[in-house]
Image (cartoon, rainbow, N blue to C red; front, side, top):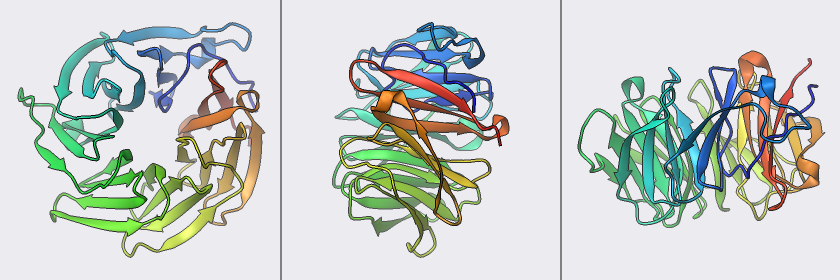
Length: 303
């Protein structure tokens, strides 16, 4: 297990791996930062910083990167959606239309031609990157409360909401499927085969849901998540599930068996709010804070 590298500022968005080498983070100080973890030090706060992206007027809550790593989208308390050029650190587009903070964002369409955003205003909006129009090309208003998380895979958009509903939008068929989780949802992620969805909720349970019939195939327990927005992820070719915890620990479960295979202390025992996995390098990054000593940690699997 590698020693974690501690970075500065409160990380309020999911840390994203860029090109398998860099980490992109959004912060409560309204900035987005690109780090090279290889140059970060456990004893030097802020080391490894490569680039800073500044345009947000409020905290950054989520980031999504295109497959070619050339652009990324960011959202937060501005009620806007930002499209960035990674190399030049310039904003390419800004879309307005949400009536509350924007919690989540993702790319869809061919070569990331569409940006999808979910908001506190209970809507999901689709934006055309190739058009000069500032209007959304589609708006979904099915949620009864804040849209907390979304994941785009192919022609399908999966969203999680504080209303406890998991929604699947099939854009080709023009239909929406709804499954009841029963507790506020904090994160969703589809498996690579597109058959199942990993769902985290505020009852300290992570569920693996079958997209075809809405049945729960597996559950992952042991961590604590009842108050904070804690996001889980899949890793190592969907063979493991990783999540933070309000106990300040990282939990790793076997995907098929649902058993805890490793527990790691993190963030000085405070809230570990988000984790992201880079499967090719067998590394993951976690974000956490106690409100005073926020940090980003990088770990590597030695197995």
